[in-house]
Image 1: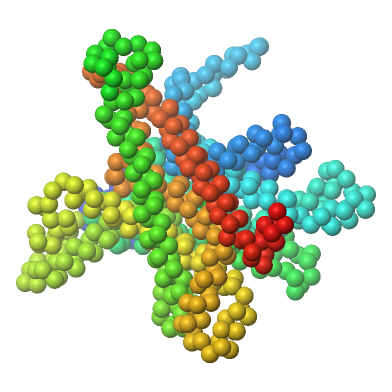
Image 2 (image 1 turned 135 degrees about the vertical axis):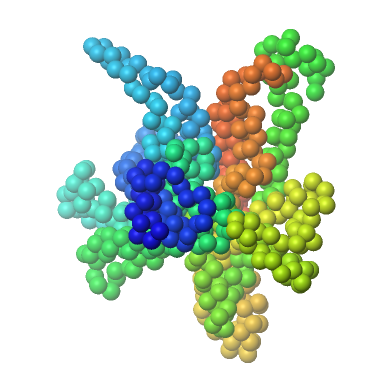
Length: 279
Length: 291
C-alpha cells in the first residue's frame, strides 16, 4: 500500500471519514505520521474555538474584575481563582461527571407559551463538553492577563484622553483597549500556546474517544501501546506540536506588529514569548 | 473505626456517613493526599537541580553544551507536557533495560525488538521478576518522578537562565576586574544574587507542579484521582455502603483540596518574597524599609 493511499484512508480518520478500522499490525511510518496528523484536527479545533470564544469572556472578566462595585468584581475574582487555582485535569473530570448527571432525555424548558426540550447528550461528547471546560479555563487565565494589563495602562494616556474630551465608550475603545491589548499580547501569546498544548488532555480525562476518533496524543499513545515502542510515535507528535507552536508564534507576532504599528519605529517591541508556563 | 460500624445496614444519617468515610479504602484515599504532597516535595528539589544544570549549560562557552541546554528547554516548551509524562517512563524503562541487557547478556544474539515485543534477557529486566511487589510499585513511582523532573527541570532551567541574565552586568564585570575567573565569578557573584530574580518564576513553577500532580493517574499510580473514581462510582447493594454515582462530589473535594494547596502556597511565596527583598535595592525592598 502506497503512502498516498494511506493518507487517503486515514488522513481524516479522526473526524470519522475514511477507513473505519485502525491499523492493527505492521505499522508503517507513513501510517503513524498520517494518523497522528489527523488527530491534530481535534487539537486545532479545540484550541481555535476555545481561544476565540474565550477572548470575549476574558475581556468581560478583566473589566468586571476592575469594576468599582464588588457586585461585579467579586464574582470575577472568584471565577478566576477557581479556574486558575485548580488543575485542568480535575476540571475535566468534574465537568464530565456533572454533564453525565444531567437527565438523559433532556431538560424540559417551559417558556410560558411553548415547551422545548433541551438535549443534554451532546454535552458528554468531547467535542462540546471538553470545549466548554477549555473555554472557561482559558477565559480565566486570559482574564487575569488582561486584568494585569488593564491595571498598567499608563495614567498619562488616560489623563490625555480626558483632556481631549474622550469619555466612556469612546475612551475605552480608542485609548484603554488598544493599550491594554498591546501590553497583554506577549503573555496572551504564551497562554495560547499552552492552551493548545492542554488540548491533548481531553481524551485522557473522562471524555471518551467515540469510535476511536481522538486527538494527536490519543493516536500517538495508541501506536506506543501497540508497538511497545515509544521512540517513533512521540517524536512524531513532538514534531507536529513544535510546528503548531511556531505557527501560533508567527500568527501572534503578525498581530503584535499590527498592534504596535503607531509606535515610533525604534520603540516597537519585538514579540519575545516569555514562557511563564501559566498552566 | 467506630464500634457501631459493625453492621452497616442498620446505620442511618450522620452515623452512616461517619462509618462510610472511615472505611479502609477511604483511609487509603486520605493517605493518597499525603502521597501527592510528599511527591511534590521530592520532585521539586530534583527539578531545581536539573534546571540549575540546564541553566548553567545554556550559558556555557562550550558550544555543544550550550546547544544541549537551549535545545532541552525549547524542546520541552514546544511539546505538551502530557506527551512527556506518557513518553518518559516507557522510554526510561526500555533504555535502562537495554543498557543492562548490553552489560549483562553480551552473548545474547536475538533482536531486542521482535515485532511489537521488547525482549531482553531475564537478568536485565527492571525490576527483576523475582523482586517483591513493593519494588514494582516503587519503580513505577520513581519513573513518574523522573518524568516530572525532566519536564519541570526544563521549565526551571528557563526561569533560572532568565534570573542569571537579570543580575546586573556590572557585577560580573567588576568580578572580572578583580581577577576572578569565569567560574569564580559565576559561583561567588552570579549565583548568590540570582535567587531574588528567580523567585517569581519559581513560585509560578511550583504552582504548575501542584496542578500537574493529578496527571500521575495517567501513569497508573494510585493517586487521588484513582481513588476518587474508585470510591465515587456507583456501589450496588452487594457492597457494605451502597450509594449512587458520587464521583461528582469526590472530584469537587479534589478541586477544593487543590484550591487550598495553591492558595496556601501563594501566601507562603508572598511572605518569602517580602523577606528576601528586605534591604534589596528594588522598589519592594524600599517599601519594606519604610514599613
